[in-house]
Length: 314
Length: 253
Image 1: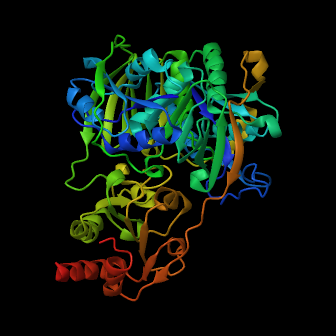
Image 2 (image 1 turned 30 degrees about the vertical axis):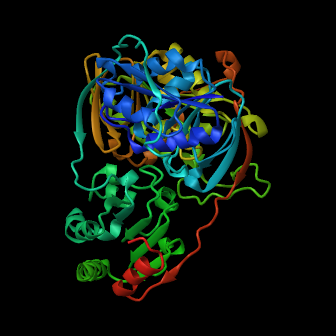
Image 3 (image 1 turned 60 degrees about the horizontal axis):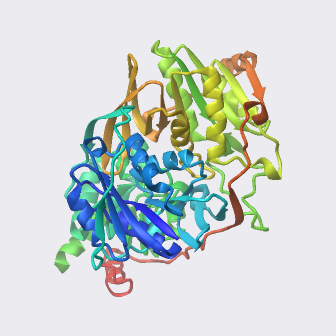
């Protein structure tokens, strides 16, 4: 078997999600090649060559690949895909954007968001917001797959020493153009790779309370900040904070849910966390059914008290 | 400009789904069905484009069993001008996978020649997140997935997308495919007069064969199980007790 993994990167370095996708490729078994498609992405390609278990790195470089436009990245993947039995990408916004385009042009039914590999053609994936797990077998000659990063422990980012091979880039499709990017500026760890996440829900009552009440706790714990869909819909915080079926899927070591009742759609995004703490005034809130530790009470008293206790210790 | 919107009938988002005891799937008999929430956002966006004078006609399309007619009527009540159902048989062989749906939609697009197609980013049943991208690929059109803002200027669509870590804006050459994310809009409530009006709008039915599309599934579902349940833990008395547990028992801080 020969497996191609589309790297998630920012032209300078390789994102951790790539390491999870390589881990899934290792479960399938076979020679693993990593494709770095970008612009002036030599550093990222070098970093990819260090990943443990990778046999070779293919580097496609062109100005029209700088912003990972789906039409142009798809053309690169298609130019080499026929040589592989499997084409994988992590389920990041890039992976989700690009891979179905690749699959359709290969006339293949993509397998989205796999969480386990049963055999080279059989995979497990969550459906209905993670309320059911389906085992599916693909009949297609090439398996096009996106990998839920929380389902596979990342391989080591170093220890490998594969060759970087430059490959030709198909010309610019000129169907779409990049205009601008607004990156949420934050000193905090990224939600999807944070070891600790502090999330707020409707119970936070306002966006201001996220800053005043939740941020000090996240600061003390070195945590990323997240939110439930209810808090996003209420306009308290931006959508890229959203944890859940329709937001980000996370699995940190510690997830602290503050003022979150625990709607199915939220649980779908965080129930694989190692340890879950729930702080909620409603003793009957569904979040307590999955929390390892629950604290019933007013979050506006409990959270500041927690921060005080943490200060004492440090 | 004609706008095409695709609609999927799914188990209502408020329903707690149950896995069938034989492991063949989830229980859908006697369960409340609704329009996929992201598709509702798609139809709402099309109606807003029409209200702005950008869209001239909205065609809602659904692929599935006869029951999808009801969902299409909802789309008509929100503001679609007419509807097309690509009807597939109900029962065991009824599963339509995203590639098949994308091929059916492609055939409809070739007939209808819309300037824009808006789809939900994912359906909340199979959570695939594929159809829009696949349709764009098969048509050779540009795509902007996970849209939170859409403006049409001349022969271009400017789309702001929800991406990891923030927002990104793209300019697409029309015709194009846009898939919706949550913040694009808040769909209106359907009013009774509009439900009545919707009953009089045209709903055309086609068969996949007539469109020359093979819809047989490529993925075989071997089994469906419930995920391992997390056990409820313990309640702690106060913040101090919580930190003690996190430090000494769970060892996470």
